[in-house]
Length: 122
Picture 1: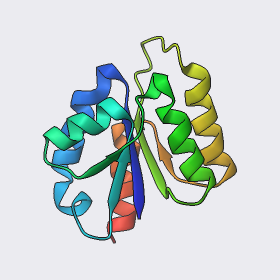
Picture 2: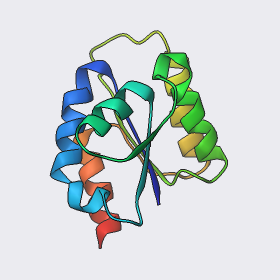
Picture 3: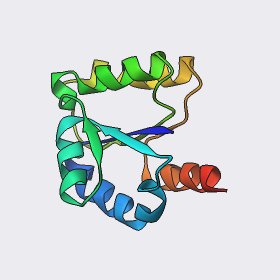
Picture 4: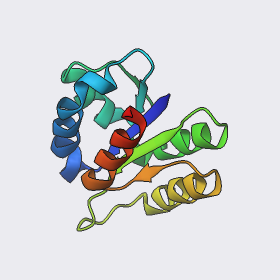
């Protein structure tokens, strides 16, 4: 199962903490992680094996959306910062839309991400 991880700048520390809290599951051999550039670098620094795309503002959100559309990415964990402005908002909205169109689970906060991981860990 391919899981995409993305986090806005203000949420990257929360994402790394989330990954560490679920590392036994996320490091299992049947899970592969992909990420936007900076989020992926932070995850690698925390000891996770990650396939990195471009950073979000440089097209990484679009690259992950393409993988969703191609049926390669099975879940997206996107820790959005709802209080910050993002210049690549159209790419973010496109990723959310593509997940909806292709019926791919998408978590935009930690609580939902926990529920999704719990559901697939059963």
